[in-house]
Image (cartoon, rainbow, N blue to C red; front, side, top):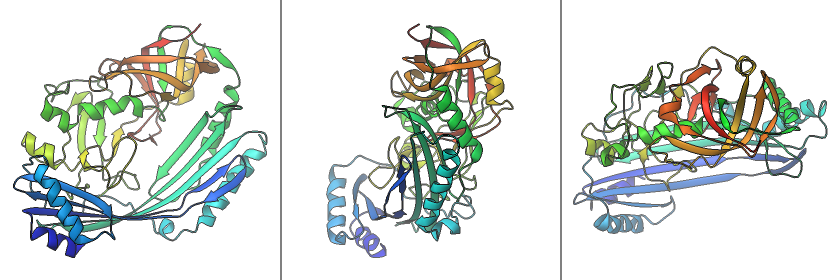
Length: 437
């Protein structure tokens, strides 16, 4: 990598080498049987060069010919976009958190097999007929960034994921429970019990009326709402002048019980890193403070265009993928929605009529940038008189987070991770629900 950087720096004004090595060993169980164990090893590199004010990028295997990579990146820079930034030199120092578990680095796949068998043993004692799939993955990442500003830093990170899905009969759907952490864990028994209980409730199919009612978004579904704030607080959208938050700094956008923090300093959190994917040191940032919008997030390019520089949020990640194939763009590290003090059972018991939403289909429907959503309920439950009546079928929900987040009447005390946010279960009063009853 040092030779690649030297070769690029001899011909370009600036250069950056992003080297990613990743080992994964997923283990899948299908309906009570161990199906497969996979081993994947990636060794990839991305080269960015800036010449005459234009940026060019080439991405590929670390075994690619260095001369070819430099020549191709320079060709891309000839027609690449104009940029105004310099690659960072600042050391990350004490930034970041604990993100590498030695137990995962040395863990044999046999541990995942044993843990999967233990989960099956627990479920089999009560529901031997239940179709149940399990997924385990142990991912070890080594990342290095070198650039012509003198940046030369690296980190190692582990990420452990366990997913349980109880499949409905004659269906590809089911109750899904997933946990991801940078350290090893055994899947909690209370979450397994929750899965079994929800599967049992799903046996009764219920039509839902069309009217406004309280909706309890389980933590597994809140990403579909908070993806809208990612677009609203995205510095790229501010630079383009298309975000509804462009004139909202230090003004209320949500109710006073909503606080959102971007926190890359959380121990064992999947988004924690000492520096972002452009080498900029990361730090904790207040995004929404008791309803007041406080900060946009920027990568190097959008930060230079806005004038304030990067906030350490240049991340190679989209909604569906992460890796060298994605160019850096403004993304949260670990978005955290501060919790409340209520339980799920308590919030359900307080509903005269309402809906519980575990997950959604079509989260991209509606004008995301403006905060609108219109989504089908994937797995959800209809509530009457404080009791779950059964699984809600053929149901849609619609609203706008910049309106609905002024009507959050309850949040659970627990915090769970989903693809966008660490946060609690969220009860919103008076959401538009469309059913068939």
